[in-house]
Length: 404
Image (cartoon, rainbow, N blue to C red; front, top):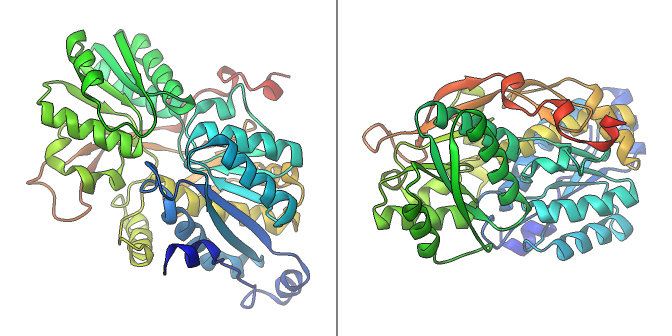
C-alpha cells in the first residue's frame, strides 16, 4: 500500500458479531472518527509514523465487534510544526467529523492541538507526546496521556544511574518543550539521588552534526552524557558518540527498539532504558508484535508508543460503549477515567484525574552482540518499577483543575 492510499484508508468496523442490542446501537450511531496525527516524514517517523495507525486499526479490528461500537481512523503528517498540527486538528474538528486526535509526538505540536481541542471540546490522547507539562501546568480535562512522559523516564533513569555511581551528568537536549522537560525531570532526579549536573547543550530539531555538542560534553568531565532527544536526532547523536570513541556512560533517555536497526548493538552497549512495554516481555507482547510486524511496510517490531496506541484505542472504545458518542470530549475522557484499564500489553492500570495513565514501568538493558539471537533482539528486561515509584505524584504536578 502506498503512502497516499494508507493515509486515505480507514478502519470502519461494524458490530456484526456482537449482541443484537449492540448491532442495533452500532447501526444507529455515527462511527467514532479518530484522527492520528504524527510525524510521517521527519525525524520521528520511525518512532511513530505509519505504525501508530497500524496499531490503532489492530485494536479496532480486535475489539470493535465485541464492544458493539463503530470506529474509523484517518492519519496526517504534522511535520513537527505546531501551526500545521493545530490547523489540521481544527479542519478535522470543523469539517471532517473527527471526534478524537491521537498520538502527537512532538510536545510543542501536542500542546497546540490540545488548545484547539479545548476550544472545541474534543478528546485528545497522547501516546507519542512526551512532555509531563501535559498533565501538569498545561493539563486539560479533554486529555489522556497514555504511554510515557518525561517525568517517568527522567525520574527512573536519573535515580537508577546516579545510585549506581554515575554522579556527574552533562545533557545534550532537543531545544523544544519535550527535550527541555526531559532534561529538567532527569536533572531533578539526579540531584535528589546525590548527583550533580555539570552543564547542557541544546540543539535544533533534525540536527545533522553533533560534534560541537559532544565536545562540550567531553570537556565537562561528566561521568554520564544524558541524551534528552529522540528519533533521528537520538540516532545521529549516538552514532557520532560511537564514532568519536567517547569513553562515557550514556543515558539515552528515550532510546527504543525502532531506533536500533540504524544503530546496531555495537554502538549502544551498557545502555539502560525505561519502558512500559517491550515486545519480548511475555507471550502476550510477543503475539501482538508478530501480528503488527506482519502488517508494517518495513516489517518493524512495535515500540512502546505503538503499543500505547493499541491499548489506548481499546480503552477509548470501552468508554465509547458507555457514552454512545464522542461528540462531548470531556464526557468521553471522564468515561475513560472511570473504567480501570486492562489490556494484553500494559496489564492493569488506571487513568488519574489529571489524565495520566498509570502502569508498571520496566528497566531494560541492551544486550551484547553475542547475547542477541537475531533481528529485533536488542534488549533484556532487568527490573520492574511499581507505578507509585515511577510516576509523578498527583499533588506534585501543578495541574490547575486538580489544585482547585
